[in-house]
Length: 182
Image (cartoon, rainbow, N blue to C red):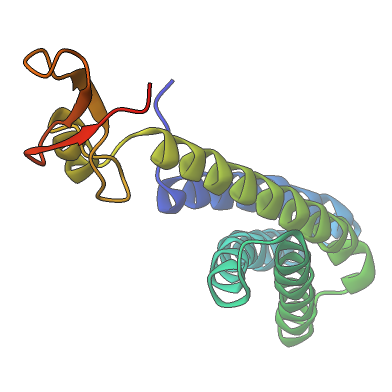
C-alpha cells in the first residue's frame, strides 16, 4: 500500500470532516428552518474541515518544536484540539447558529480524539522511519565497509598475512599489518 503525504492525508480527512460534521450540524438545526440548516451545514462543515487541517498542522509543528517524545505529542494534541474548539465556538457565534452547544459537541469531542490519534500515529510513523534509516547504511559506511574500514574509521581485520606465516593480521583499506596475538 502506497503511503500518502501528510498534506494529502489531511486534505482527505478535512473533506470527510466537512461532510460528516456539516451533516450533523444540519440535522441539529433542522427545526429552525432550511436557512438555519444550510447555514449550519456550511459553517460547521467548513469549520470542521479547517480545524482538521489545523489540528494536524499544530500536532506536526508541536512535535517539531517540542521534540518527538510522548509528552510532546500529548501537549501538541491537546493544544491543537483546544484551538479547534475555540475556533468552532467563534465561527458559530459569528454565524448566529441557534444550537451552538448541540452543534459543536461532536466536533469538540472528536477534536480531542482525532488530535490524540493523529499525534500517536505521527509519532509511530516517525519512529518507524527512524528505525528504517538506522537500518540502512549510508553510502559512506558502505564504501568504508568495502574497504574494510568500520564506522569509527578504523580498519577491521580482513585476513591473516599469508606471507608472514599467520603471524600478522592485515587491516584492509589501511595498508597496515599488525602482529597477531594468537
